Image (cartoon, rainbow, N blue to C red; front, side, top):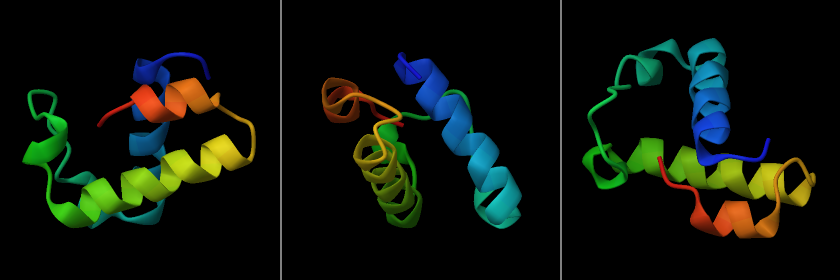
Length: 66
């Protein structure tokens, strides 16, 4: 993955599989801070995992927001 859009899309696909209730919170017009803290926390852990596994660059990990 090389763009923020790809990372967000992949995150929501992952959430849809593992936590359908949380997936229901997805909205296209919401900004990062509009989501509940639990969604933002899971997103942060997800980004950290992708970076540690070298799926995304550190630069992208520091830049991407929900």
